[in-house]
Length: 121
Image (cartoon, rainbow, N blue to C red; front, side):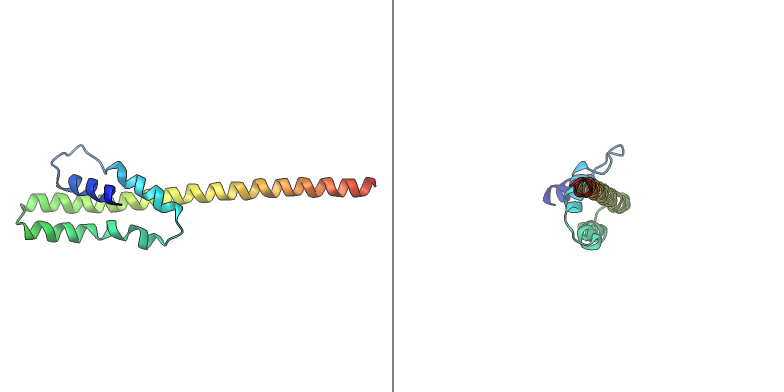
């Protein structure tokens, strides 16, 4: 979380228009997706980023253009985190479903073998 927060803070205040959302945000989402916490609690720090950054910029009398860009980037970071988190949860659920399907097939084969053995004996 600390690495993502540091990277996002630098990105929010940077002049680089080509830079996208820092990859540490995706790393954070991947880690958080493994936990069974509610998405609202997991992503709340990124949701709260915009008002905090704007308050900090106002307190430091930052130029309006910087405040606008930082606000837009904070929104982009949050939306990106939602997409990434949900994609990771979907992938994780797909893996779990595939595992259940494999186990079901294995148990069905075992049951079929038992029934054949019982019929032969």
